[in-house]
Length: 294
Image (cartoon, rainbow, N blue to C red; front, side):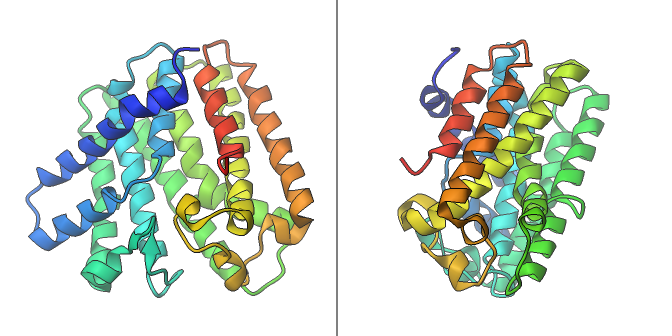
């Protein structure tokens, strides 16, 4: 193994955070907009998505720091989505990772604009990345737009809202989560591989890995909403049930959800075996996703 994920996270988590905040601080913005954007970027979290970008690059023997712009762009989009998800018109949450949500501090209008700012600035970061040739910039920008946009996260969010208070099938729930959660995780792995000049076969195997990891992440999220703690998941326990959302434990029972979690974890690990690289770090991340309640 190159290094453990704990060591990798210790090395790069603060670098990702500092890179994002430094880039925003350098912008010529109204003070309140800048404060609102930085407030949510500083809210913490494991930064799983950007770290997966960098971990994939390291698996290919590339310098992870060359992927900092793509990693930061991805985390900015994830952060914007959380700001908007917390709004009264969406999930109406007062707390995010134990702190007041953005709109509770800065007001709804500023929270919306801060999210908009992070979303659009993420593409500027990619376009201005000095480490990438133009053709790879275009490829990554197009991929990120698909993963975050109406065919990806946004479309999944719409389907999730429309599915509330209804009885979804497991297939419908999976389709929602592939788009809402899985697509950004897929970008994290694919972006790292693209920047590392992965072969078509390696890209296909890593895309399959990311598909399984994304579903494992969401299934475990549903499990933690019942068995976890507010400190661990960053929101009140039982919030999905209180909002009458369809979840894997609700549709499959808790035992069935844990079986499905194991199925997708094994699928992810099997996919990695077809990548002829040092993927121990990605394997550890997949295992941590599946057991992150421990």
